[in-house]
Length: 552
Image (cartoon, rainbow, N blue to C red; front, side, top):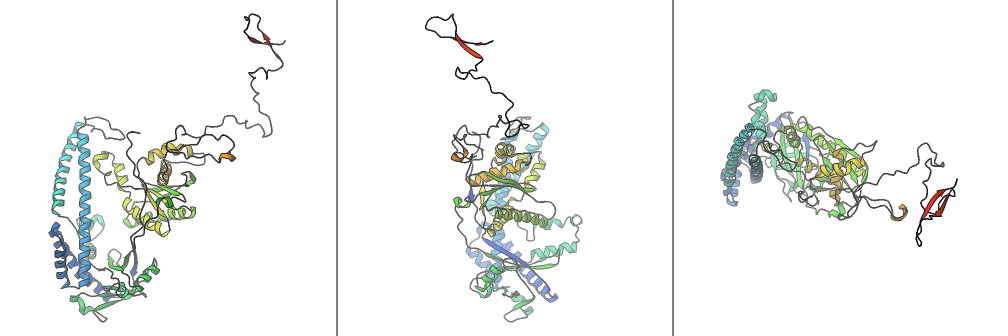
């Protein structure tokens, strides 16, 4: 076990810090749509201009430059709209900065792997803990060229990081590249242009606590009436007083509607965003607000009612319920999903599988769900897995970040706690210690089911290895049932109960006698009467030697 790395302790994942609900704006008039398009285009142009200025400033940004940008935007909009635009710009720049740092780490991981494999002789076989050399001199040559390419990319990325230069595309890089592949995407230039412009619009407003209905720019009344504060150049489009435009459509938040109504009636901040789904031609309104940070419950309380260990795979969740002692209870459960197809289809599949998992967890009476703290950011590199393209596609297809965020938010609504554990060796040790003992003619245990048990035991704080207590000195009524839990330092207690070999034959009734005759006794007292013990006449004085003879 000297090569096993140190394992991180399990921890309780903090609950969601924000909430977002959405509803469709139905029955909009042509005038409503013209006003929304005009406002979105105007404010979108301002947001693009502000983002360009912010990216040009790089690391030389400060409070003075922020205030200067906001003053320039206020002249052509309003103070609140300028504040929302500058805040969105900073969030977008910070997101690009984090993506740049992740890209640098990925390049460094690939460079380390390439240098290691290039330093090994060609043909050296790898192990489970370390990669081997390349298969041929040709492959070694190609990888040496790729190392030079990655080093050049890394140098350019580090230089951009040090100067604060980021690359941001308002509207999305993927949609921008689609412009060059319209036939493959099934789009015309006009339809693509409509999507591109809609993605670059800006129709959002931050909430303000203490103001009427918690937002002055985009106001939604408890009855669902939506009104917008128009920017100064578009004030002539207002249909109500104070330069506001009221839409004919109303919204009704079916999900969390009561919580939203309580917030706006108490004038607590709620942010709104209006956007157009150009593919469907539908307008939507999204409301979001922050939740107060709640102290996570202690880990001891989270595991008091047992946990459900969940193993995340490319096409299903493998879950197993464990009691507080780490013993598996019941049968394994699997919740399949399909991650092929469109983004909305994949999201719906994950949401449906998580819903079924949480309902089963709630019905079983457990208090927590144990899940691996997965992060494949350093595992997706082509340099590490080489020709294993299928495996690289497998781990790249598991949406670990989105899965964890959605699971935490959905579990909070059910009153369940998420416990994150170290993912190291869960599949290997689970299959080694739990797959075979739990396999029966009526239960087919997979390696993923056994990994769920390993994850659950680690979430409970127990070792993964299956240990059994010694046989009871008396009946089971005195020392209770046998347990599979022992102290971590206990020795010579691993393994299953040895199989019984002295059962009665199946063809003998319960009250019948055994066919096997008892063996001959080895003591004088229990000798049969057909045997007689005499003293051997050739023994010396003071010595006794007995021989058994048979009476005839």
